[in-house]
Length: 292
Image (spheres, rainbow, N blue to C red):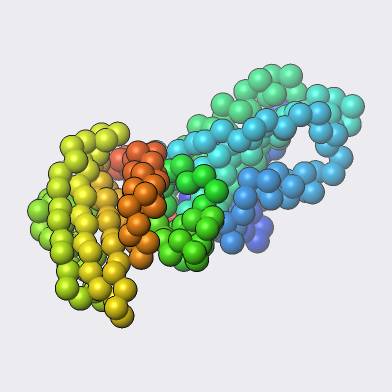
């Protein structure tokens, strides 16, 4: 949830709260909760402009990545224009969960409020409280060049440009909260068993790779037989900051050059993983579950 200042005038609607300061300072705020289907920033901008057709747009900034005190990721964009012949600024701060998003919208039409509205929206959006940060989470990484992704819930499975001639996939799993943090040895042993699922005549190896981006990195590899076809699987596990990450390669193309190229692609993804933030402890007295 997001709290407006106590003295602001507030009007609650269907999934939206509109708020004004007690003295007219040329500011209006709207807070949209539970926007379904996880809209893109472009869709959020289009919707906001559709609600304010009288705004003549002069410029729209590129989205800037944001983060709440709980570690929820989002984006902010600023739209400058004219409203009724006067300068105006519309600031949009979106916060993205798995299947829903929230948007805080601040519109300023006076000289003082135009200077202040971006900072005000940024600070308010950062202090949103949801109480759901410790859950399987998507995270930022660089996708492999020319590969195509097929999302499966929170998972992303990447296919090379020559698939299916190159029968290879790389799967990026969601980060898991606290997984393996207390017992990494047991975690990797469990992961090895899972990595060999469905394969016969398994040869398995595992190794420590040190640290990367502040995360401890471990690798597990198996080679096995599936329906008479030799299959290679390699999973790289990263742990740290209360989160565990997994990126996994599977291929039936064991030709040396192709295998090394695909393994290099796997490592490139792993090297680009941006660790999720450690969430600040929320003020539980302020929580009103957004799902109500």
